[in-house]
Image (tube, rainbow, N blue to C red; front, side, top):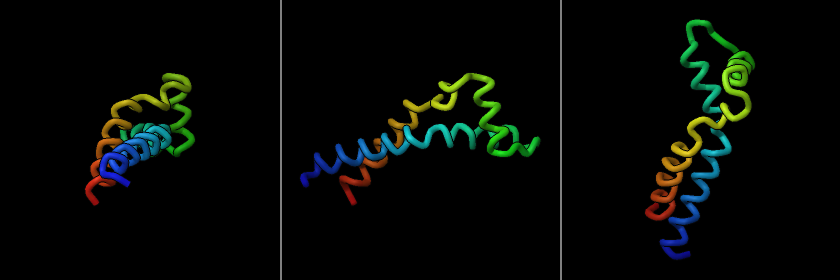
Length: 79
């Protein structure tokens, strides 16, 4: 494959992986913010849903996909 193809495939793979795992990252972030309460994963997920419904699980997906996409593209193209 050419370097351009490697870059494109790395970007696509990184962005897709980031988008797919964003809900778990949102739950993890919620758990970190409320660490003093020691929430379970289920309690943190319930809190996210209560505060914003299903779309809240994808809050920040664009920035996360862009960042991971660029990182993966560079990795695939140069390593």
